[in-house]
Image (spheres, rainbow, N blue to C red):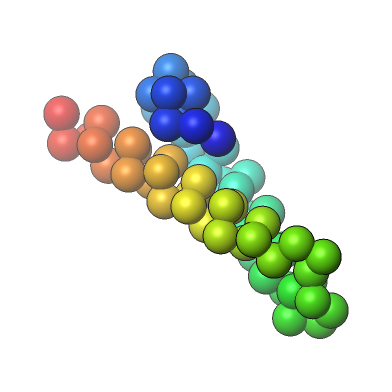
Length: 63
């Protein structure tokens, strides 16, 4: 997810997406521990998206 797409979301949508991506990351990490993923860079992409979403939520709380 791009930063520009994240900025357009509402706070409720951000929280929903954050939950989805965290669950997705946990599932990918577990799958990778059992059998190596075909594309392990997926983990990095999802982890960074989680960080972007969390940062945007924090930024909006501060404002």
